[in-house]
Amino acid sequence: MKWSAVPEPDIEYAPRSYLCLRAEGGLTLDGRLDKAFWDKAPWTEDFVDIEGGRKQVPSKRTRVKMLWDDEYFYFGAELADDEIWATLTERDSVIFNDNDFEIFIDPDGDTHRYYEFEINALNTVWDLLLVTPYRDGGPPVNGWDIQGLRTAVHIDGELNNPYADNRSWSVEVAMPWSALKECAAGGRPPLAGECWRVNFSRVQWRVETQDGRYRKQVNPATGKPYPEDNWVWSPQGIVNMHYPELWGYVVFGGAGATGGEGQEVRRAQQPQHAERHGDFVLPPDELIKWRLRRLYYRQRNHYAEHGRFTDDLALLAQGETDLAALAPAIETGTGRFQLSAPSADGTERYWIREDGKLWKE
Image (cartoon, rainbow, N blue to C red):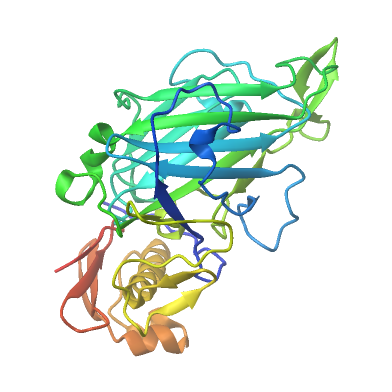
């Protein structure tokens, strides 16, 4: 197989994090987030541009709440908007052709076998499973459905009416563990103290009113709609959601956990020498995996340019001391490579290969 280049994200490794508390009582879905079920769930930070701080702050606020219980992973999203519109009504349509809200979940954090979910203001959904990211060959499994999925949308205003007093739309989603555990470590739901990699995206198109209806604004220079905005919870450093290694960390709290905005989030039994990023204590092994990932980008880019992988660490490290200090073992062959490095405590070893799969032994 010939391997394509993989653009390297321009971002410091500091994914956002969230303490997901246990839900109390059942959820009757109506799309509203102003009911008791959501009261103790903290909001995420407001969404930012997908490329991070180099871009302007989004013009419309987006934020999310999460909860969990033995049966479901719950999501509540609030999207401020004075132009609430949607057109697609068929399940598994390409929902991002409308304004939408999206959820991405990689249960075991290996960047393979992960979930994507999209929903518009008509409560039309698209759910799919990615065997690998598109950069690693895909493919998406569009026929995969989240069995037992429950969703609802509430509109504070009026859908598809440019003259209404539109303020926001909100979404409730309940995803059953019976579907999500398929790609999870051990084939099971999470335990308290464990974390999954999760991110959210909001696609927002420029629209205008014509004949009393919304339509996408067309760039007269190209004759096509202007590119959409992509606003996310944890920035990617690149206009591509399919870099699961940059998604946020969702830590599942136990029955006695409490939360609130600004509260410290800790993973169970974190090493004392872990590195801190914001309100999350990042386990040192996560930085080891990130350094291996950066070497993977460069191996793939070297292959795209030269038609082969290299075992020259200096060539891959490009003078960056943290990569050189990792001193990974490098194995190359025809159309393949493996990089490996020990865990922070030296008891295990992390591996990554040419298709981006990362694992430990």
